[in-house]
Image 1 (tube, rainbow, N blue to C red):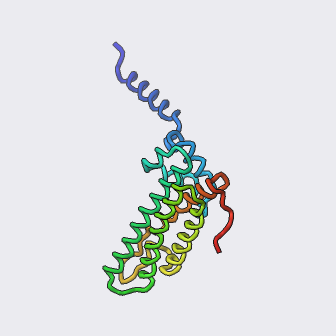
Image 2 (image 1 turned 30 degrees about the horizontal axis):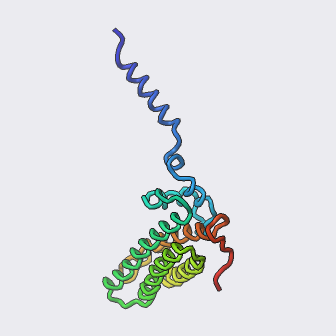
Length: 195
């Protein structure tokens, strides 16, 4: 009688080779819509893999049927992450009790960033191209805050409390949303800059 060990070895090897022959999940499961957006040039110099990773984990992104749906879902992610950053700045002010004006400035500005993302969502639902201008303003608020708290974020402290590293995440989604609305194949194809 033949030993069962070689049979197990052959089955394992065959299964392993079949596994290796399947496309990678990152490319196999990502919708063509997300792939096309992630191939757009993004202002953060975000690479394709980072863009896909940032988007594809969310069910709203997976169910997007067109650029508008994808833009709304991306802006919702941006708003959620901006809210986390806002809460972090507010918490930082509360914990430190220092009254640091830079942290206060960022808290105030991130309140405007959250509102900006909400208005952008509402305007995109109405197909208004003002979304691009709103996203430009959101970026300006973010940049002012970023300059105020200095870099590298996540290592800079005020009274021993770390500045939230989540500040970069909202901008990542803002950049992706901007590519969706204004990139070469975007909804509104916006090429200007807000002065």
